[in-house]
Length: 151
Image 1 (cartoon, rainbow, N blue to C red):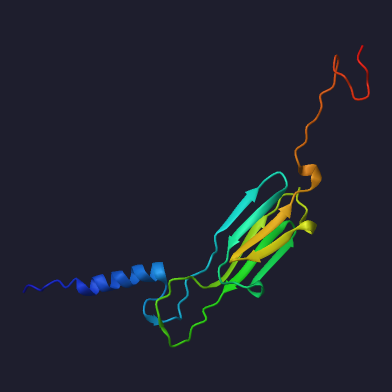
Image 2 (image 1 turned 45 degrees about the vertical axis):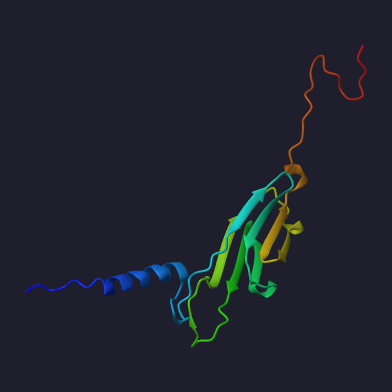
């Protein structure tokens, strides 16, 4: 006996799998939350190390920044603010996140600053003065030393 192959249930399941992976929960109660991990740039120059973290929609009270034993830790949480029975298609990720960065010895954590503006968290960790590059004069025969007159 021949049976007809019905691709519709398989395509339906495939669509649900793809959309759940890309956009959270598709058209159902918003109980399943996709993990939230904000993008963070780390930049360094002669004066500081700067961490720039995209946290749109988060407020000061949603974030926590700590430094302990040379490790900078950024914690936060994006909460879903819809109702339990809402029919939604989640396109944004929600939940708690934590990122940790080992800081080099030549930074001054006492002078560290953090600013949250327009959904961007910027953490500036200045370098200690001795960590900045400096030019060393070369001495020796035939080289004029400071305060010395050449004949």
